[in-house]
Amino acid sequence: MRVSVIGGGGWGLALARLLHRNGHSLQVWEHNATYLANLISNHANPALLPGITLPEDIVFTGDFAGVERFSPQIVILATPSQYLRPTLRSIPLEAQKGIWMSPKLLAVVNVAKGIEEGSLLTLDAVLEELLPESVLHKICALSGPSHAEEVAREVPTAVVVAGRDEDLLITLQGIFSNDYFRVYRSNDLLGVEIGGAVKNIIAIAAGIIDGLGFGDNTIGALLTRGIVEIQRFGVALGAKAETFWGLSGLGDLVTTATSPHSRNRYVGKRIGEGKKLRQIVQEMEMVAEGVATTNSVYQLALQRGIEMPIVREVWEILYQEKDPRQAIISLMTRELKAE
Image (cartoon, rainbow, N blue to C red; front, side, top):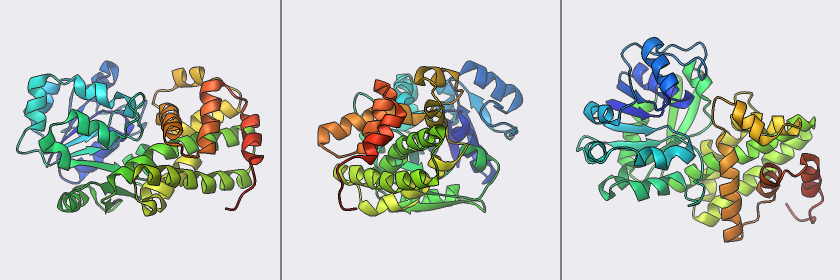
């Protein structure tokens, strides 16, 4: 297969390396001129994937005309969630036609995790607005507990690919899977997107708990009640309840909320230690998707009347500068209820 990865961040590069190992031809588009120059010269980005060198025959470009000429059969969208729309809109019209209308195009696989600010749309819904109608059944999402740093080092990993075409999902399973990367499939595209997005908010909360110096009891309570909130939110929007007990729900939540690789947990920990959000974000090389998604999910929950007390407290900490200790007290002193 000919695969173009749109977005040369850590996750995009890790997937490019994986798919190259699986025998496919890879091209990576990257907009950051410094990152792109390093990738072309050294086939590496030590700022994002330290110690990892990518194969020499992976092609790197910053030109969407080059993506069109590459004529990909699979397009992987690996830009941060809030940049997905502007990135796709920046593709020149002729290149858009050549990429999306190509009879060779098999699948469009989103691997970003978030809910768009402003529109409050899941990323599959954003793609449905932007892509031609003939491509909509090819939209899929790949999600699950899968830190780029570990996938790049070939640490055993299991994820899920979701979409509406069962035959396409089976094909994608075969394309992505190998002896260290196992792919399951799901027809609940909405649920997989929501699980991947909202768990980042709970991961910020987990980091705050760590930064405050609280212990395992608090984390256990957070993860248990956090998955309840994620499921409640997803079901209210039309997802399947059981999806949230799988890899893209509980699996991704546990990994993101407990791992030192997690950018969202890192943001939360620094806040718990007394740092300001603006300073933390400015100092980071990579994007913590949960910061923007907290605002999106909070606003959407308000609109729909969905009870999400953890999300509300994280939103107040991030956007209202509420004292994190007071937020924990607010959660602990809510009205008593059945589990």
